Length: 439
Image (cartoon, rainbow, N blue to C red; front, side, top):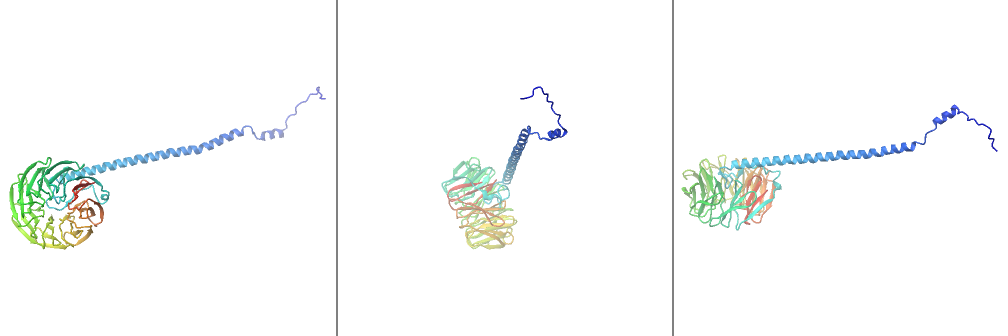
């Protein structure tokens, strides 16, 4: 039984007991602190991931913006270059365009700055138009229009950019000479024995004149005079404005060769196997040089020299003032192709299937490039590239320095037409009846 009357006084804690109480760990608040710490530790990685993501997005956005700005800058530069090239081409061809590009028939376009050896391999067909006959004439490109003749008796004016036909005119028979365009007039012959001058914008006939025979010789226009040969054996000098005959010169046999004009002289070949030089004003004979076979090739004039091929398989280099033979190079077959001259090198095709690059001064062969058939097409040189067609149905682009095949495209038939290049586009006709544009 408990003693209820007894008073119990609590004992005071000793210092040892106080100390042990102080030192006793407080366990009641530890779980809460641990959770907070764990949450802080868990939050840090998530924050780092978010920060890394934000930085990544910023970097990617900056890269995209830089890429867009670079592409815009590149596009602006390319557009500016293309525009500058177009202006240069327009200025350089203001006197006219014709077979061999100019009156000297150098076959060299110094104004092309869009296509070069680094990007010509990217050429793709842009457009084509179909005519009713073979196209073995070479296109003339000027003022945004391509002019070409066809075996279907028609001359075509085609928009250079779109391929849309602007106008056509029937000239009465096959057109196998390449048109010349100068001062807003297109000059072309036909197998109906007539030679025509047409308005370049409309196709309306300005004048026509009988030249006594069909014409496969391509005209050249210089100083208000048109020079052209005929299959009747005459070379004509016609007034470019009226068609009036100023003078004629007869070889007595067909003239397929297209005349070149330089330094007041007219140079051409004839089926009598001779090369002629005439006074451009009077038609007086200045000299003749005999080769070993009829001549279908047309001469090129450069640096006081005349270069021309012959059916005797040779390319001739002649002193222009005297006609003295400076050198000859023999190929493996007849030369029907007309030479081009650029940067001290003569380029010419041969029926032996090869394109030749020959030193213009010495006659040394730098290189040859082989195609799959004979080459009747004539070369065009632009910005380090030689463009030429072949009877193997292909158009080629060769490196002018090395002869490497940079690009080719197969068309529907043989290519006798000589290519034209303007503002990054290659134009050529084919015996499949089509005019092509590659861009």
